[in-house]
Length: 226
Image (cartoon, rainbow, N blue to C red; front, side):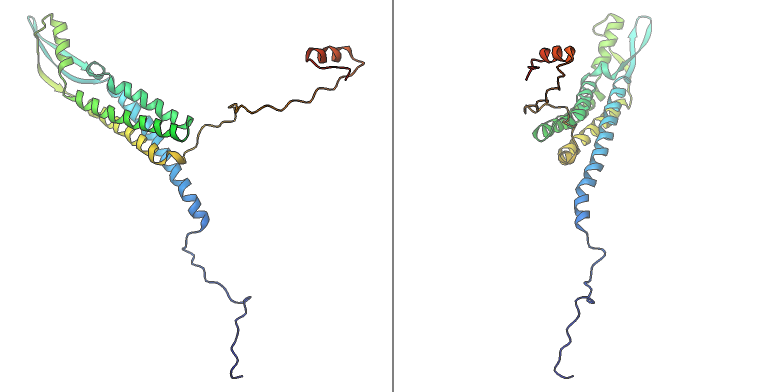
């Protein structure tokens, strides 16, 4: 009939839904996913970086020949002879990486900053020691008994730069902790005392016909006759 407008049936009318539109569940899962990824990368980078620095500090960083009356005396120095800073900072960084999970809020930010600074300090100390010949000269003077003895044909290894790489990994772990640490889990506080009063246990039932129950109630400070 003319002049009559058809009204759509709401039961048969379907609402168009974009299958590619992100859902609320996807939005909530995104921060959790990024937190887990950053946590895994930070743990791996920090642990690997500390291990590399500690290993590199025990290796030969430079070597050369010290001139003596009997001929040339070969001398080598390890990273720990050149500088002890990288190894010490690696230990500090590793401890900070573990401590990140033991603290919350401001404490986590401070510990994360300490982790990043440990990595940065390791990089600077390793670079400074890469071309340092002072330890080699000192070792030559000790071996020859001549304070003015020098080292010839000095060569440097790549181990200082391995320590630099390890320090960079520690720095990366610290930066990740500063950026995403708020999303990481913390140690459970199940066993921490919160200062609230503990609920009193109901007194055990005392059988007046059993002397041992009477004595136990008296030991607990209870009135067995009440």
